[in-house]
Image 1 (cartoon, rainbow, N blue to C red):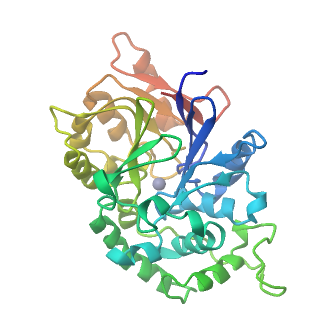
Image 2: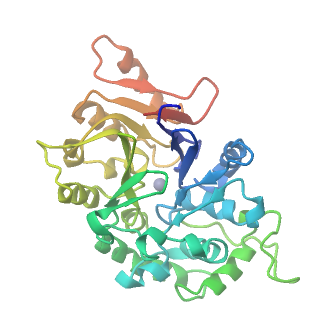
Length: 368
Ligand SMILES: [Zn+2]
């Protein structure tokens, strides 16, 4: 008999997120949340290849939203034939066009790629706990679902309006450039994906003998980050009395509205063990209100700072100064944007602690 465990690994996803959660008691169960941008894929693949042979099951794979720094690695991961994946996916959550027509929603090339792949490879386990509809607030009783292994999820984002805001964008991005296809046309998306050889360097996606053109299309472009971020799937995950809010790149107004709907107030904040801070610690995705509605010890920042100087000093400082409890800050990279907080954490009477990857390493594990 072992003690229950719940640990969160912020894998080295460069400017994005790729989180591996391991939990359980006698056996290890896993969640994977996002896969980083394409340039992080070699590191992510290497990490996943270390999973024990015969025990590579991921109980739930979550693709929080369609931005490249979250989705590209998953597209790359799922592009080869199923037998070659380093993980075995039991369920997947992703909001694609076909789910969201219910609220007229969604966005862009990567979204269509992802949908085409899931449709071909994982259709039977797509958003099943949400009756195959969109994964969102207001879709299931108490906004809560529980996996077989006992991990409970309480939804914080997106709400229906946040999803709807993406619909326009998704349509517009498909009309852009060399793409001419209708949203939700998964066969057309598949054909385009076949041409995107960066997602399948071994040419595993051939539809027939002459279908693969080696020609790379122009670099993928992220869609409007604000609408895409706002559509992020975000939730509190709880297991064996431990909990973490995984916020994707969600918007704080949506998350705070959900917290208040769940009964959280400034005088009765939600007690959590950890928060994976939204949008890599962007100053645009953290608010005073949020800091008052949750009471957490561990604050997780996932970014190598290569874009937008994440985490922004304003956010880190807001957590240090504004969190209800003295915080421990966890960073998955040592960069000028994360190291700057180390000296202060070691000063006499410091209100906060800092944690970095081991020397020469990238990525970090947080044990709750
Ligand atoms: Zn992001």
